[in-house]
Length: 248
Image (cartoon, rainbow, N blue to C red; front, side):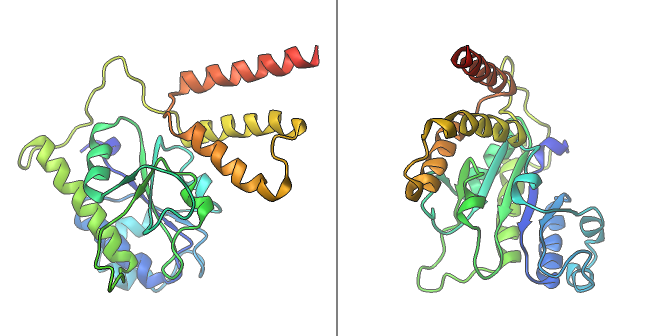
């Protein structure tokens, strides 16, 4: 099974080692092994994670730790944020089945990010995503723990993969002719920073009280198209040329 078919599971600021272990167990049940941790509260490695993983040691041993969510998804073309509400960020909302289908059919690395057990993802985390991934649950008892969320998403990814491949066939990354995958998040962040660098001296983000909302809207506009790396490079060139013209 090609690594490009497998989403990266990112746990953002997880609080308990036991929950990290249970999430790792849920991942390996469906063949997922790449786990990334963003600023785990109790540090890493965590002695409580191993017993809770019940044998999913390969996932824990290979887990990587990052200081920020942006760093954890920098090499990913698609980021899906699991959250129960939009939190003021306008993004396409999809279910776990559609997320699984996108992982199998859209070329490029995919990351699925999960928030802390108590508070969920912050607006800044969700702003990095192309999609908001929501799992419909009983509104009268909307209590879903971290491992449950991971196993639901992992299961749908596995189910959709078998559906596309037919039965138990080995999954391969679909070939998209003449279509480049979206640029990695790192390149997109560079483009957004370039825009902000040019707009800041021209008072685009004033008044200050609206600056954060304006930056978020700008990020949304630049994130939605899913530009590939050549398109991002072209836009960066346009901005550089405009800046040079203005100076002259």
